[in-house]
Length: 194
Ligand SMILES: Cc1cc2nc3c(=O)[nH]c(=O)nc-3n(C[C@H](O)[C@H](O)[C@H](O)COP(=O)(O)O)c2cc1C
Image (cartoon, rainbow, N blue to C red; front, side):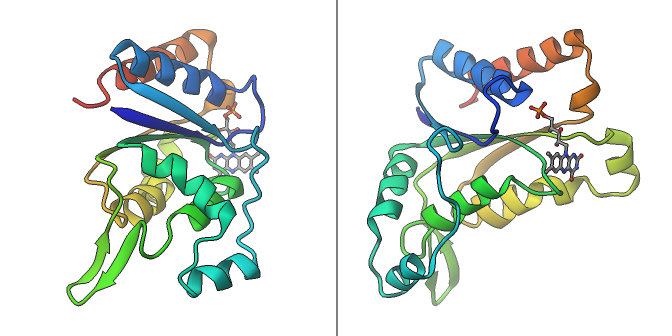
């Protein structure tokens, strides 16, 4: 498959970066073609400004958005790697969605309701969190972490097979625990289309 890895962490030496590399290794081992979209390294401006929104609403795709959509539309598989920031994706990733998932390209309104249009078949969402798993389970808050992305965004745009993993307590993990997670992520990459 052609797999786009979308990465949203500002530090190149973060655990998120190690996760990105592990996933890339696994995907490549299985022969997938991989592209990385490193939003911070590309200095992506996430604010959807008035002039771009106005163009979109006139049915014109602005150059900046066409450029981002080229990477998205190249892929038939997609992976996201990001830390949980205030129960959500970092703003740079949220802004990327605001830009690329446009009406007419990612979804459309039809007489039968909203129709997802993305030709992407599979998605994997990898999220790190600072909080404890027990807290999220006890408060029944876990679904709030991933559903805005898995259901509210990716499934809405037509992606049928979506997996997610949340890694808790990341700042306090031992080296051994980190290695276990990285191995799991490499395996997820290796079996991406299974
Ligand atoms: C701006 C900001 C907001 C955060 N919000 C949350 C949060 O809502 N819930 C949580 O469990 N952790 C939160 N964290 C902690 C990060 O998720 C955690 O430090 C990160 O996933 C660890 O991965 P890293 O070592 O690759 O940065 C936040 C961290 C920052 C910097």
